[in-house]
Length: 112
Length: 112
Image (cartoon, rainbow over all chains, first blue to last red; front, side, top):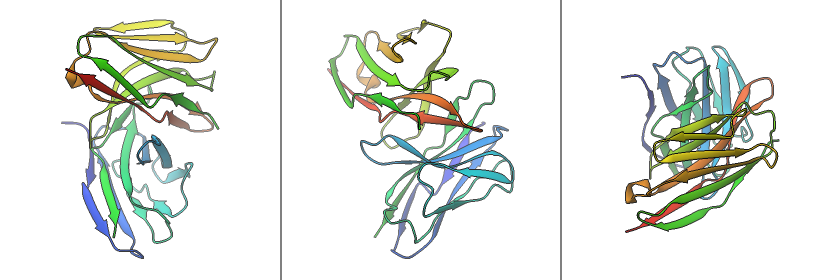
């Protein structure tokens, strides 16, 4: 089945550690996105990529990094520079014709 | 930047109609969307409307678009307990790359 796969679903991290969240899609979409969701604040865009080997900062990129070496993969690294990393992270890819976003099931990161 | 606003909570009785409202700022958006999020999961597209349409109906869902007032609404007829979820209004911002901007989400409670 086609879709977006995020892993891990739950992740615990100690302060000062970097962690990488995986996002893989087999929908053949060019565009991929990372959003952060906090209670009552909706989704905020961290990074997005319109094409392989290219990506742009979203509204809250500080403390995060990404890479887009393959069309299928768009991993997100939460670095120790991110001051408040505990959140629910959502990866998505976009259909080119309608802009519809297809989301993964999310990764919940908790900093201990 | 562009902004999408919607009320945070709505409570209805099972069998009644639910109406979720949204206002947006980018008049150049080609598409406007409604996404649904179940607890602990990613978002799924419910429906979308072209900016040149005033209304779209899809089974129990009716979307109304008032471009003059930049107002979008989602009506769910015969609301069921399974409709309890968070509903997000969204528009696409085109600033050299397509970014989907989300509202904060309306949490719909359906009372049996």
